[in-house]
Length: 78
Image (cartoon, rainbow, N blue to C red; front, side, top):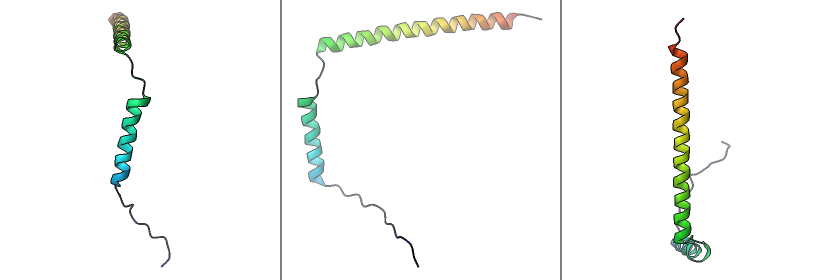
């Protein structure tokens, strides 16, 4: 018999690596990430809200125009 024998990978959780990864993640979140101020966060949220409303109104208007167009086209009798 010839061929390559493959075995399933063994999942090994190394507790020291896990603790190290958690500590590095914490350090990065605390010391390296620049968090927005409350004022910046509120301003960004208001901007997103206004943009969402504008886009929703635009989509509603386009839907109404197409609906009127379709009613006009299909309302024609031959």
